[in-house]
Image 1 (cartoon, rainbow, N blue to C red):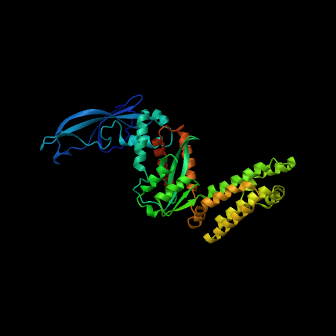
Image 2: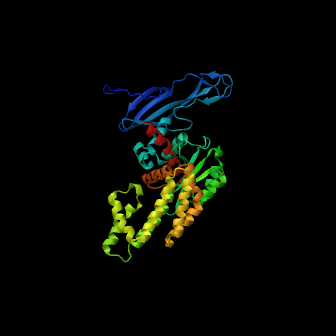
Length: 403
């Protein structure tokens, strides 16, 4: 051995190093398991009789940026009691594997943070191996597998796999902050089947959804005892959209250009909560409300809805919602009639927020994470792999918090 080298531990106490050498582009290490004897799988008797041994090449984690190849003398033993010939256990690499278990785990973890192609290129392996390692790593670490305890509060939302063409559904444990499942499509059938497989469906107290009829129908059928909560932010956004359409429509009407510009410049001020408005902002809105009565009416309807969500009791919220409906009925503007049908159809789900103040805020955050995952991989052709990668974010987030 050259006198300018140092020895590096393999950190594999199960094997005995017989020989090692460092080449220009890799390390080559010859090893053999330390065990002397093994137990016969047929009769259970111990034997140390070696029948033969064969040299196998295995890849291990790199050392000093050089790949490591382990040449394992894999032995076969003969049982002296029953005569059976069998291979010794291979806990470091696994049955019929050409790489070490820790190397595959390393590939799987690295591919969760960067593209599969990049990991394969850096580690000098095929992309197929990296994909299999990702699947193994995710499957091994899944936090929620359908046999876990059913959560009390569930959030359901959709996300686009290919914008405008393909949508999937994500189901989350709101309280536990975990993704429970990624379902193909955004319709009723798959969600209904999944919720029907929950271990303890009676434990679910409430489900938060956006204003989607298929989601509502699926929850009603599979979880009849659970309350459906219309997501607060989706409801308020729906009312804000009507306000914004009203402002945009009135902006082109017959007032002078300077007055129209004021309406445009204060478009975001109109969407702010009333209690968050400064004195200066209130002062700017006063002439706008005087010149544009339809905008004023839309703004008052939006604030009426917000008071429903701030009510301390469900009875107070019902009164506020009734007052909101009366205001819409009295309004001479036809644009607001669509809000009336929305309230009528989702009234119970809106009021359920008073009993269970949950939202899909966590689910929406996961949707943003999903978009990042999709961009990082330049899209996914295999929906199953995409779902596994999304589920992997559960324990990635858990590891980040623990550190």
